[in-house]
Image (cartoon, rainbow, N blue to C red; front, side):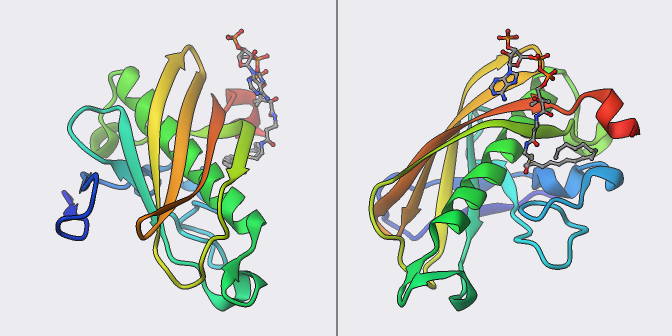
Length: 175
Ligand SMILES: CCCCCCCC/C=C\CCCCCCCC(=O)SCCNC(=O)CCNC(=O)[C@H](O)C(C)(C)COP(=O)(O)OP(=O)(O)OC[C@H]1O[C@@H](n2cnc3c(N)ncnc32)[C@H](O)[C@@H]1OP(=O)(O)O
């Protein structure tokens, strides 16, 4: 399935969501993550796609609900962190799979776990607004992928961060 979805017309830095969501191609035995697993009925079900044709920029969208409140009208910081986290591992999976010469839809996705997560909370994050996380793949080095992330709510950048993700070791998969 190919998806192309333009952001609000005329918005600064308009982005196109392109192609399949990586999480829809995670191996079934590795799709239970609270943030991004399609097989977790209680989770966020994040979907991360390439944002353009360059294979370096990604986009993930999430709209928080009232149960994720920090104080009335604003989002809990742990939720912001978890959305950045799984946007980062999803971006790493896109980049690592591409770098390995694999086709997402034909071969499935490689699977990454978080090694390091950095979060900078820049502004209070408003509730019930779509949060847009853009990822920029900084480096693919062996099993390690580094992704810089920004989160916007409307026109405002509310958080930024970085994920260092490591391809899931085979011995973890088999355990
Ligand atoms: C979920 C845990 C896994 C359970 C497995 C069960 C099977 C289930 C199947 C599928 C689940 C999928 C779930 C996805 C969920 C996504 C989001 C999350 O919530 S993840 C949860 C939080 N994260 C952890 O709990 C990681 C705990 N840490 C570890 O397991 C290891 O430390 C790990 C895998 C991250 C790295 O261990 P190494 O042995 O593979 O690493 P080395 O070979 O020593 O290093 C390779 C390179 O990576 C760097 N590196 C290693 N650890 C790093 C770190 N923590 N941060 C940054 N860089 C790191 C090193 O400096 C080295 O870099 P140079 O090649 O020299 O440039």
